[in-house]
Image 1 (cartoon, rainbow, N blue to C red):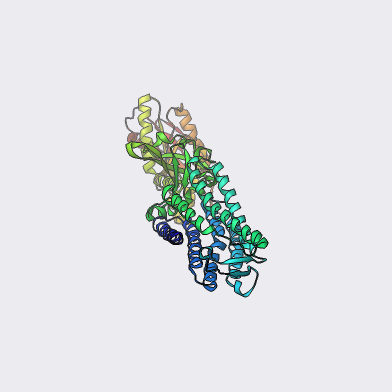
Image 2 (image 1 turned 30 degrees about the horizontal axis):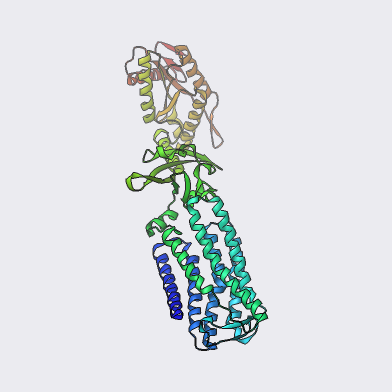
Length: 528
């Protein structure tokens, strides 16, 4: 009766592990699942091999079961170590991780080859026999010189597992400690049971070769299967998420950070690591406010829920602009569980917007403001001067005989002359005056309202502009091209609109042309 109960228990263990493998593959999209599933597979091999061993009718069949068990025993601890390293995010480079895996997976392979060829040598078992009077005991063995190799590798791997898990217990949030404890028990139970069996096989059989040794390891795997079930189904060993969510999380360019109600960083995607380089260190329960470069604007997430986007800048090698949106995660009765912080790099968008704004306001040839932008800003300045009853001055000037420049030197030379004139005038006017290309070879300036400009100051500035251009010829392909300006100046005294002010300045400019060019004229006053 007891024998069949054990067979049923081991069979249920097999089914439970098959079920967990199916559940993990179906519901979990995390890459962490692969080593976990392989660990479950080693339990399957070990349990199935033991079933063959204890149900065999002879030494040959029992030995076959033992060989199958060795697939599980050789790789159970190493694969669980790799799973724990992956799950706990043990930080190392890809190259170093490769060379760490070589001995972890390679040495068990050597042990497995030795185990499967044990009937040809005495390295693993010196001798073995099968007693039909005690079928539950399975194959009885006397250990060979390399028998302890598998056990040593398992002990080393489990010791490393325990070190990693203890470290995470001390650094991760308390919410994850149950899962970590269950994982540790899952690793320790079969190793401890197997170690007792090994000590019995090596020590007791040496003293008494006829003594029977009962292997409790397969029965501890029943406990391990239950612990695995608790990890997966109860304690959330994996975050089971829809495929679309999992794929999107790591593929989207925007940074994605999950924060719990205690402001602890729970999870993040790859894009978040590009913004906050050390965020991996703070995952699984460390406060987000401790993350290097975490912006002050996101220190109070509660007041940011479903509000306007939060803009901030971060500077590493270069300064970049970001926009963050915060959404609350709530349960029943609107209980707040945490926040989802979505951070978008808007540096390129801001640059594009600035470029578009600049293109909309800038004359492409000369690099100064264009007519449309000038009229838009000048209208506001003119209205301000009316409200404050302060003087406002406008200048309009164009290049004398510019058509002759184009006809003589070509249009490319004419373009260079316009650029040179715009640069010289821009360097001459005050930084707060508004300079623009008005059309063709014609330029316009609105002197800053409220800067205390008088008629004399306006005329002095205009004369300075005229002199700066006339004093030095423009140079194109080594050829000097003399350029002069005719400048008209007008004030808003007795003028009701910006349009009338510009007409007065234009009339003054034409008066300068009619009276000899290369002059500054203000209606009622003029300067030679």
